[in-house]
Image (spheres, rainbow, N blue to C red):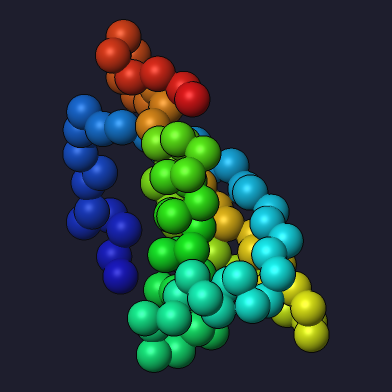
Length: 98
C-alpha cells in the first residue's frame, strides 16, 4: 500500500462513543431466549440477546461486538454498545451524547 497515493476525504459523519455493559445471565434463561438460533454460542446469538436486553431497558444504543464466557450456571457477556456522539471534525448541534 502506497500511503502517498491515498487522501482521506473529510465527511460529515456521526462519531460513535462505545460503552460496555457486563451482564451475568442464568444459563437456562439465555438458552430459552436464543432457542431459535441453531448455535447459541455464536456471536449473532449474543448480539440478539444484548439487543433484547437494551430494548427491555429502553436503551437506544447500537449493539456491537459481544464477548462471552460461561460456567455451569451462568453466561457472562461483555457487550460493546455504541452511541452517536459529536464528532471532533464537525460540531453539529443535533448530535448528542447518551
